[in-house]
Length: 225
Ligand SMILES: C[S@@+](CC[C@H](N)C(=O)[O-])C[C@H]1O[C@@H](n2cnc3c(N)ncnc32)[C@H](O)[C@@H]1O
Image 1 (cartoon, helix red, strand yellow):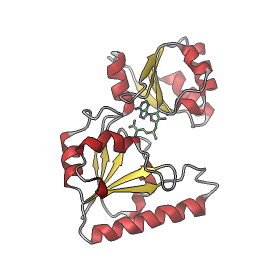
Image 2 (image 1 turned 45 degrees about the vertical axis):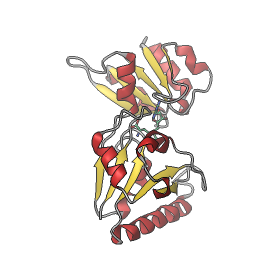
Image 3 (image 1 turned 120 degrees about the vertical axis):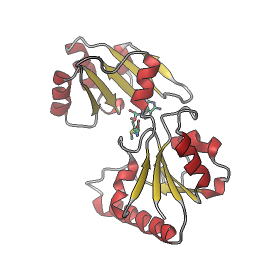
């Protein structure tokens, strides 16, 4: 049996593919990553819940949100255990799906354990920034323009280079370096739309750069033009 990683989209339960819904309904086991050991809190699960007929099929997988390099042995032992457990269930013939927010190819926790599986099937989901662009009603690219996706946890020099080169910049994990982001938007006289909790409770959208003066929620993207 094969493991299928499903992107459930950014928040709105209707922004999920027909194929994803079918595979969730057909699954024997539904894996859901959580940030704290013993936690059952998951945004991906909240989005997919209305398509899950039996909540007993849900298994929570703990993914420690600590520095991976500094805690390499500890983190790897947890990932290895997840890999072994899932492989055992696959050998028993179970259909297993793994739910992830947005799209599985954009900053997804599953990447950390993918090496333990021979073959994985991926079902794409709508990433937060494509839903964000639709909500803001502004195209990301037109004519010859280019677009980049940056992660504010990346090196400052690299982020600066991206701002120098591209017409549109999608900024993920905004909360990781708000000071630099504010500087780059102001220096380049760029326009920006911030979108927080897209499709979730407390959705908030603003074009005000001063939004960066206070710590923004983790689920925030910026679309810079
Ligand atoms: C670990 S990444 C997950 C990205 C996800 N796989 C995707 O395709 O959008 C988490 C970051 O994605 C962005 N994000 C994900 N979902 C969001 C949402 N509903 N609203 C705003 N930002 C979101 C935020 O920038 C957040 O810091």
